[in-house]
Image 1 (tube, rainbow, N blue to C red):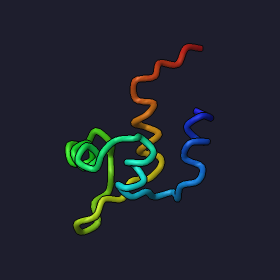
Image 2: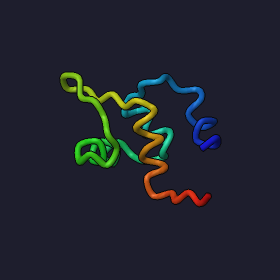
Image 3: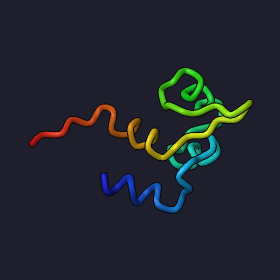
Image 4: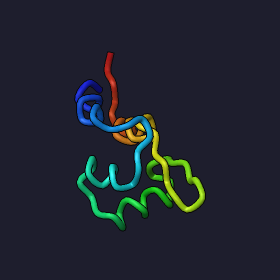
Length: 68
């Protein structure tokens, strides 16, 4: 998890789709597709998407199995 914290460190707590494009290295249409279909949770304010860092961390750790 520390590696994701380092990746997101320079970004604000609530991100824009443009930030997500930079973080995940994906294109604009892909970002809007995954936001629209709920793959990454987001908050829609009017016509704009806002993505809290927590939702990105959840997405990145979604398929990670932790063994204790």
